[in-house]
Length: 418
Image 1 (tube, rainbow, N blue to C red):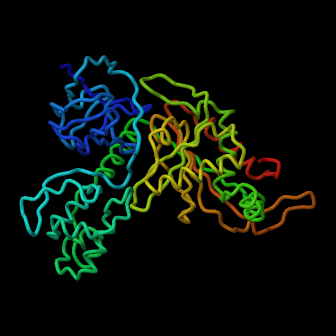
Image 2: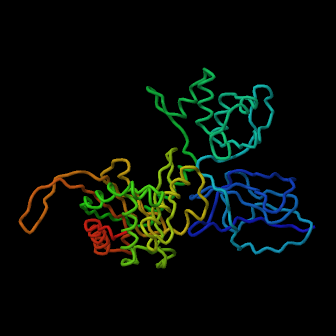
Image 3: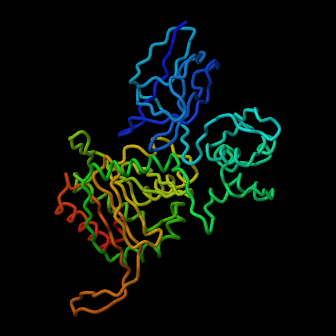
């Protein structure tokens, strides 16, 4: 008999730890190669870690909610043959989850208070769903009647609340707390795991980087009119929707070639200039969480290529189908807050990157237009751009010139710019 240590694999740049979400295999369980053993969560995505060997799990080295460093032993598996493994080897982790996080524990049941609901029709329960089940005393039989709309048929909070509402459940105090509909009472709730991770990530960024913002206004009339005129033809030609964000990504990726310091990272007092231009696209999800999928080698893609990659990543994010590679290796981040009709904002840098760019809403405003025949007032489509950058490394002149070049390409957009 030999013992095999299943370790926490490397999961990309700047990711050095993860939280144990749930054990998918218990001590004493027989496992085969490629079986998923444990579910983990990082500040990027949730993933399931597989084993490479066949054997029996003899020890869990950590409990649910423990934080584990890359390379640490997650569990020990007793095998029938000697297995050699380099604990520093990078392992591919598949099947991420973003919104629903399984965590199996003892659950009360109306018919049997000691029953254990580990799995219901192959659907795991997230901690939030499980807490609602506890509060509302929903039985295993009732849960089996609920059709889950989450990934792989998983029962979501929305599914459960809809079931409770339709069942005329009278105990609404907890539900009101969950859906935030109380009118006259203050409410208190704990931060979710995702909120805690995002909070820490943002606080670490503010405490480490010296954030400076610079703004510029651009006349986007020609580009916006071109997009409006081409969107139907673009859809017919490439089977992809063309948004205002796509040409802006196209422009930014080109300008980054001329400003390598803005496409770099700062790690351990070392500036790492990236050879690839990988644009992270901040994406808000329906549950209020945020994820940043990455368009790889954006500077080498045509506008059609950027549209296809961007649309695919956003759709995967909103369906909880992103994999770890989709959110790794970003070199620069864009946030289009104009989607929510916001005029402008001051985004926080996505560490270890050195800058982040926000686009505001496109508005029709009166502006002075200069011509050979004199100046006149015209209604133009205007957009504000905000660049947050790390002033430890990037000076104001560099940040200002970067925005100025983006403004120039926006205002001089030509059909051959694609």
